[in-house]
Image 1 (cartoon, rainbow, N blue to C red):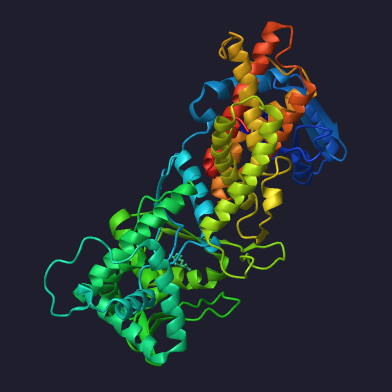
Image 2 (image 1 turned 60 degrees about the vertical axis):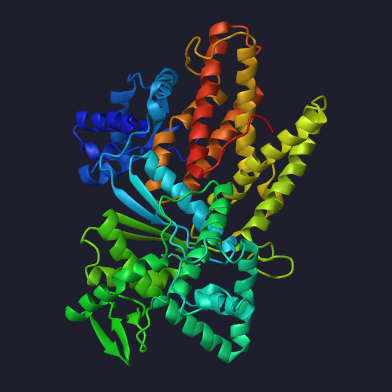
Length: 597
Ligand code: ARG
């Protein structure tokens, strides 16, 4: 379905052409003076220069052409040459009626579907998820959903941090604690046990302990390095341990991501990229891209137009070891070979932006990707505490994601109970308690995700649990509250024996109703732009506008007590459409609404 702004533009272009001007001057924007008009066209001012004519004269000519056009209810030329436009109520209602019947509310699928990989996990095996992983999960999941909605093939990859010293550290510590384990017997050739020699909580304790010891004790670190080397060079027992570490860890990670309503198509890790390294490095050397600099193998990636120093991309250290870079490059090889993406999007902390610039340039230069493969870095800012510093626990440590989530759940439960006590004091206590807990979980997720997504991704933001969980203001719970309010009215209507399909949407009967209708009509445009700009915050600010418009309409209108049946039916259609718009949008943001709150 065409975007409403494009339909208006078409009319304006025709008017400019009919008056003898180039049709490009018919460009239309949303009004920046909503008190005066709904849409505006500033083309007369631009045309004035080309045609050497006073802009107001051109504007007046255009008005002559459009004043009887049924899509407008008011058209006005205002000095120096603005064209102020208001749409006819009938036209807007017809547009929404079509939206109602369309699949996906008139959001068209892209004409050029692409295969897009999106890298938005990056959790490290054996380490708990922490708030640093929260933003990539929330933002990446939303972008993936928006892309899918628009018809792209989106492949999310968790890209586990499962390679490097951390594995050697765990093996070393385990060896100290349980030297008798069969994994450590070099001469052993049999099968290894199926059950892991640790639980997830043991694993999560082993890693930090080992990491601490290696900092204090040089010989411990030597052992860990040696274990890492042996693991990476195929020692059987260690590889069996690695499998256990991965299995235990991934099970736990999946549960955590599931609680966030986040899922990945691929559970690959850094270790999966390792087999591609030798041939990749050989090729870079052979083609003359890589050269030795102070013993290390590097590829120059600076360009003439650079305004800042872009250091070379290091491929191998002087001892021949590979690096984080090497793994990311080899991962690109893996992705190109096995999934043929036209674009790879990385949703990673913006402090890694220079790093990714190097990796992307190196991948292009050494032709790991096709000429037209798009490599996109979506860097996000830091989640800060109320003190403006990176978010920490009260003790000053790194906050585990689970702890954060349960804090938000708890706070939400408190608010939901207060709210439900006020409303459903007659519900049986047990059932009410259970429902409140379920509801709190759903609403808490909206608080957390909306609190994050409503900010432009690249900006830092302050995690403010009181504000995020509030039912008022620009918050997830406010949006859900609006949806729940609509559901409740629709339920009452159905309970009174009426059908939601009865009647049809009529032209708006009030200013507030018109304002709501105009908001709803923007949906397809907003979603497309939010994808083009990789900006879920645009969907947030849109649904905030829709919710505000709805609540203004709700407070000024007697919906269920409306005496004229056809009018009441029309209101019900409008409510149904508002609900669908909001629900579609929150699904794209990665959360859902409960039945009541
Ligand atoms: N594991 C990394 C970390 O915790 C993040 C990985 C980001 N993705 C990537 N392809 N490098 O910092």
